[in-house]
Length: 516
Image 1 (tube, rainbow, N blue to C red):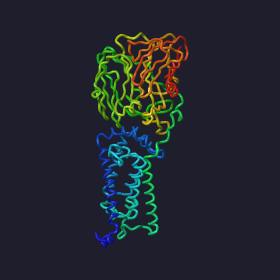
Image 2 (image 1 turned 30 degrees about the vertical axis):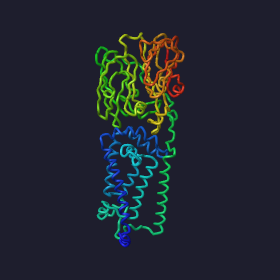
Image 3 (image 1 turned 90 degrees about the horizontal axis):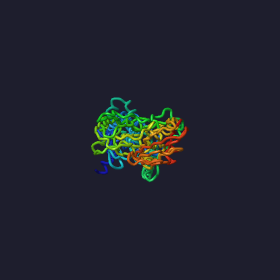
Image 4 (image 1 turned 180 degrees about the horizontal axis):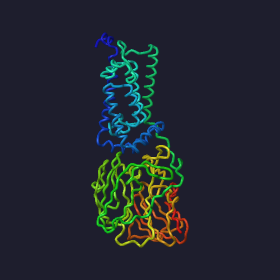
């Protein structure tokens, strides 16, 4: 092209550049929309929950927390919202339709939507969410808005046709082309120069910020501890800790139906936690069978956000078949023979197992031996576990994956709620045998079980009936293990049972036997 032809068409390169930028962003959003409409999108949200929130800068926590709270309590709605939003933005960008409106909407929803694309849309920077990439997305849309403000033509654009039919459309598209004015500033030349200079400085500053953001420690601010937001009050209703009766004691096959849910549970007085559960409770229901029975499990995933599975420590079975993950709406059935008596853990084993287990997906299965243990007057089941929390809003918490990985528990509990058996002691009588089935769900911490003022008459390590220990003061149960404890009391009183790891006891791992 000659110098003369370039001078005759001074804005052609601007039209090409800004049209290409808009179409490129449109293609990127179209790719994201296609991925969001795929069958595995709901399952991918597990990664979003596990990793995205913990990497956000503090200034974005209120906004970002709103969206992640929404995905927890209204996962189905958020899935459809993400799909429709991404599709509308992609079509608007590619067609040049309602450009200013589409730019603003895209900027607003970039925060909740782009994290979902991390490792799912593209493997590197364009699909990675953080301070730097967020600034880049905002900057690109701001540049496009500024190009429209300067009346730089773009092609193709439905907006141009709509403007010819209705001038009011300019409120949606953000510009109005006039004959002979394409590419010319609407204000005076000096103001145009200073504005352009300001935008150039802004772009340079944003690029600098994006370049150094990765090297700064821009994690979210420390979330308040559950006790600091009103969680020190009494627990209103404690979970029943009494061992349930045998299920179909005379049957050869016992069938249990378990479901995975995403729902809120109580974790201490006045505080709820948006977690994952079996049958809506954490820990899940206590299952009790007799040694020699066949246990049939019917497991259904009713959590729209992510796949789940169920792993029984009491089973000898191929895990790739029986413990496979089920997507939303799927049901998995398997059977195993209860060969070994004792107290065992069951839990979700879908990757990342740490997240699923720490979010509440665990429970106890008790297998009675064919030859009964010495009789007990009262039997209790205690499942010890940990909660790793961050605040969503008010008195509602959710999981903090970084804390889980670093073993920074906020609460350690028996049967899911801190201090519940201090507020509601477990009854016992002088001279009677109290049997405790203790299962440590973890996921991280060992338990050193102890009763102040008492000595265990018998301890069955791992539930092994042939390796009984007598006169034991405290006994350790590791994560994923279970043991059986027998104790009797010589006189009435309130006997504190606890994890003798004092760090665990101080944040919830204690209760009381009320002996009369």
